[in-house]
Image (cartoon, rainbow, N blue to C red):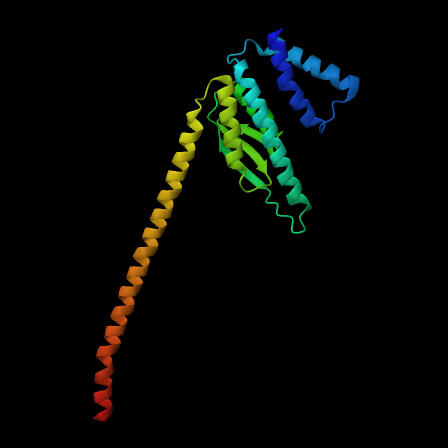
Length: 209
């Protein structure tokens, strides 16, 4: 019975995605129940279990991000300049195969502005309409990992710190290159001025002669 309840929690979001948010009356209810029964019957035993005590925190996080994302997408859609940036992104998953990835694919499509399109190995292909969707997807993955107990709470922070370190390193490299370029340019300018100073008097002496 517990597996059937879990299957319902996975099948219902997928059904809502396919129907545009409409349950579909009696036909939709029968379809969802049959799909959940088929999942329990043919999928076999699940390899990852939820941490029920962490479910309220996850639900609160998901509702909060859904509300904030919906407001942001609505603002962009109603703005006169339409600041939408549609595109495709490839996100490398850290979640293990099985139920955590199924939940990730289903829930990332329920967040405003993102839609899971395909999954190639560890690469999740997502269609986005906002340029800063990757941090939201990473945050969702971290919460799903904590819910299933397959990712530590600090892993998201470590990945964020490593990303900031990489960005800092890139900025340092860029500034270093620009500094080298400016020093080279200044040395070339000074050499050009000294050369002009040397050729100036000779030119003047030639004119007098």
